[in-house]
Length: 470
Ligand code: NBP
Image (tube, rainbow, N blue to C red; front, top):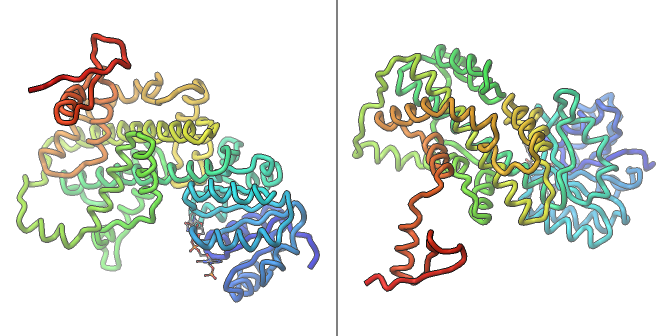
């Protein structure tokens, strides 16, 4: 086999196939391999017919087809398959060659793998790729990190196939080892949050106000014209308008039992480990967990009473407030997500540029939105900013939305409609803006039962006191 391909891709499931076709569209010569080799033949004879894509039937054949430095992109199921492929490739590749993992790997696995591959003299890139099938085919958001020396060898390929917003590709170098997969994980966590704030708006409109699906579709479509303009709001409007075969709204035929694959949970676990209050994502994950306990909920609904889920205030007022509740909650969620990124960057010594991350998320990925452009501007104006809530733009946006946000929570709570994302975001906001809260009592209790000591407001920080409380 002649070494003619620019990059080899292992894994021809939905993501791998579409990325390969995208690369081919951009003049990149790709050779491909899949464990089940019949899928290589089907791909070459089918979707890839007439392209320059090269099919191979073994990893040695794939490696032999590549120009040096060899670039091998793994697009396989995250987990042990990645480790097994790396071990085989280390025997086949030369120093300076590059192994790239484009799956949804856990960032701690990527840190371990990067060290392992670099110790063998090769380069390792772990990259988040967002946007699903459509993004992979026509322009995803790509978040690569790892061996910095490898970036110039993949930059033109990655930036060439990525989504583009305002002439800027939604792909840039994130940092060392697991930084790219970490950024992708937080992206997915934020995605859980964005979906939850939309689900809560639907519940308030549907059960609380009794709006029909056409009207709800119009409300979501109108929100897509303003500061909430985003892919997820747009598709939510489409979902409202979709009818089943009998003409009734399809949405009401779907079991309210949400699935999850783990990246939201990883975000929350990491936030706990790093001591960061990423509360809205946590509530979004827990809301999915509670939703999945369907039998338990059905049994509980037979014995537990609550108020009728009816909101009787004027519809237009409720909708205007609901919009503000969504917007303010979303601002808090992104503030929390970037605080988490900042803590992870400090912990792992990653030099993550928040303006660049916001820019990369503006296109190609599920959370793409107008909001991310504003976020990018805020971070670009102040590279030291730790929380967007302290920026002029977002503090004034929250200020304007605050009254409607509070009224929405009051109405939903009085009507017994769960709004964990809105209310946890507001509790965070109220705690975050308080220079004195209630943790003095926690410290007193801890000192009472466990002699854990406390600091005093009238003494320098770092001096600890214990009281004999009885
Ligand atoms: P899947 O995650 O469904 O994985 C299927 C691929 O992995 C097939 O090519 C399969 O080969 C291969 N594979 C498996 Br499973 N075990 C293997 C092993 N031990 N050795 C070699 N190959 C193995 O594919 P996907 O949905 O295209 O996703 C690929 C990656 O991208 C995943 O990490 C996923 O989390 C991530 N991702 C997916 C999406 C999405 O929307 N689907 C979006 C963003 C990121 P086979 O054909 O022989 O079984």
